[in-house]
Length: 460
Image 1 (cartoon, rainbow, N blue to C red):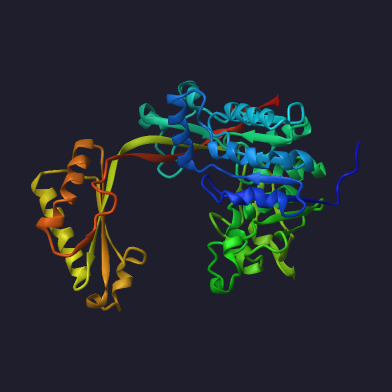
Image 2 (cartoon, rainbow, N blue to C red; image 1 turned 90 degrees about the vertical axis):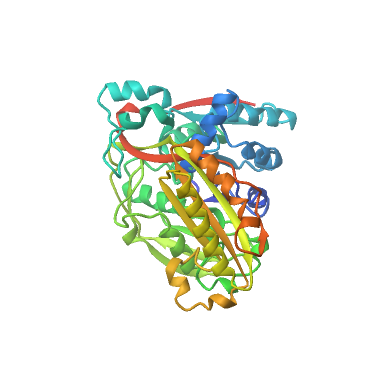
């Protein structure tokens, strides 16, 4: 058995589907890394991918990932870098086959093993689960899933790091998963590299915290940072964060030398509290991390040490992310110019609402925002503002309804305001809006024993 490494570097390469295309390449070429972690999935993403797969059985994954791999595979193979990504969405095997095809085109036949993690997709099993007494109650409302079963678009359990570890142990250099937790993509490599047992709760918690810090990409290295943001250097070439971990569970946050951005305690703290929930119990399938035990210290330029993380045993449940069809929405915009821009926009809003009411249209919600005056901070923004001095205001009106015809008629009432409403419309962004389907989120829990992750290996 080979000796365990003293340190392992896991580089964050993508924080969401649509993140900076240059980041993965810069991470694998900018300095030494052992793993590249790329996170692609959000709750609504799964329903989008499920729709794609329903139209084409070969789709249903983040196609950007395949393009990224084509660019970085030669470097990844040459340097022995391992990749973990949940880009597989609802079709991880098809994603893996696409990457294997890329590898063959690049002349890497026989040099790449791809691990495929599946088992998270519960869509085809829902009726059987409900029949066996799994109500999948909404965590926010307590309603059983049966209430919306006929409108469900996707249902995926959040798997943890264990199948990622299994794939790596079986020799996979690239691990492609479906709905594995964001943190599991980093924790898995650390568990594999250091041989952490699944009940080493403090180290599991530390690896989870490490994954949470880098799961949003450059948000941990200066991007979207409130703390003294004007002084953050060279965001145009921002360096994405890297976890430099040790076997005892302590780790440093760093980035490649010569890159932009900044790694400091304030910025790391901001990322830690992002989507945190109860700080005493950050729950994942792998364990429960106590964020109140985290200790941060600046130990060098662009180097923050994380230590002291304590953990608790994992629960017997998995979270299930369910998306279902809710109705229709549309958003229309008009831009009004000075003078009296805000007053004109408010008048246009009143006129539009009066016309919709006269038509007898029923909407579940109508929301009006005056961008440039109150869209970000609401009524508070208008307390000290000189409305007469505002040079331009965008009126943005959104409606939601189960009735597509009502939403469609709303879209036809926006454009006439250009000529039959208040003066000085300077922009009609995007033309007449179109009704869009509303996908709603249904969070639930399910017993772990009902979900069985699977690992498959594909040779390029």
